[in-house]
Length: 382
Image (cartoon, rainbow, N blue to C red; front, top):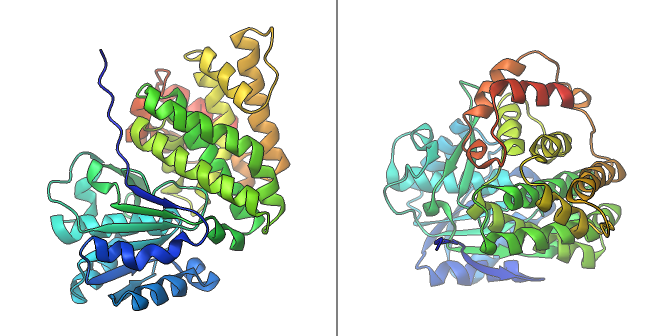
């Protein structure tokens, strides 16, 4: 019999749940926390909200928000110095994947030492991390529940994927109200990232019954609620369900890992300051067409979860409907359709293909893939 493992943090979900951050830190024994965020979250008022809550709980704190999209190794180093200089004993991450991945990376360095480059790959962390509480403000990365941190190696211009159960936060707080300040573009981008997480986790060679239930729920929720969430900032029903989709997709991919879309997206993100979800959105249908051969029955199920009628259709016919649905959804919500729209050209594709092939996410792709395949997929997406 197979043995299935499933890791996750304590999860606090619901409207106003962000107000539990102070009490959550106290429960973990924290006395002085480093609050890691970014300027976008600060401008929307969510950082101030967390600071006020920490004050109410009697927590001392320091802040670090010098983070860019696709966070860099030198930003992590600065954050580590801030943690040490202020004698902190816990980390709060507030934001999307950039802030939360940085918070995790800082936590690695303050107890394990060295450079963040030392931890690229799987299970390189040896010492326990300080207590971590993560507050997601986008329905996107799933990093608040995952065992991943993705940081840009600024010298080699590539994203480093760090995977370890040590990176699963102690407490994840998911408050759908934080989604009401996101632009339609960011809502679309992060929502398509959720869908990519769910689909890649579902077809991963490491998928289990425990991850499948999370991935399938997430796919269905995105299909039902991403369009209305993009259409309206104040549609709280759609925000609630997209927050849940992000959470469930995060739990799925944290345990089943991902695939070629993310490996290729990481290679692009290391070179270009693009929205990760938009890159995923362009690559997803092309990679699905490539992977289709390996898991046609799962693709048929994806079509059904997206609301497509598959009655009397073969798995092949139904699976093609799934790919068509993804293309149409991306079009409907105004996501880019080609990498060239984002300024990419054929230049550097061979180098990016090699980087993608070596990414940890490629290990669990359902179909064997060679560098020639990766090059072809990039070119198809141009």
